[in-house]
Length: 199
Image 1: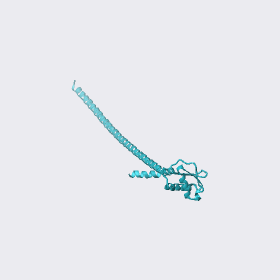
Image 2: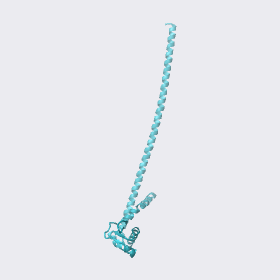
Image 3: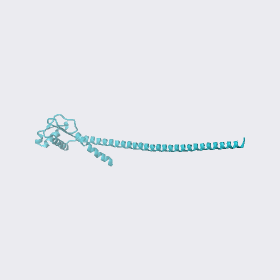
Image 4: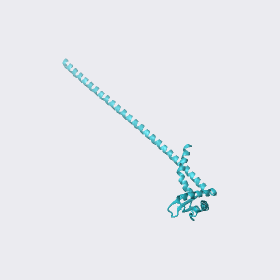
């Protein structure tokens, strides 16, 4: 082969090599750019995943704390209700065995309160065991008030106290011990709650 052909071949080979090297360099640059983009995308995905995980963990933590606080609050309310119920039961036991002068004075007050609500023409009902004490209470109130009051012959089921009804039956005032205790329940619940929380 002659020198000119060799030079041409060498020139063509050199150009081919340069083009191939340029293509390889371009492919390498593109691969590096793609790798960098993929690395950046992966880093962003990892960052978002971590951020979501942190948010989920915080949400679960808040839910867990909220559920625990709610359970503690419910337990406190159950304890409060139990304490109030026990106080009421103890009060009912004590009042169911009441008798004597203090009991008659209490019944007199209950009848008087009822008269203030119902008026002087009232029918009175009480437990069988309290009929004598209620009659005595009526005598204490004096003849003017007692003369228009009627103690009903049928007894009511109560631990103590009275129920007053207007003469025509349209108005009823329950002043039994149980009814009074029930009306006091909200106040008592607050007092017991204050005692429990201060302890």
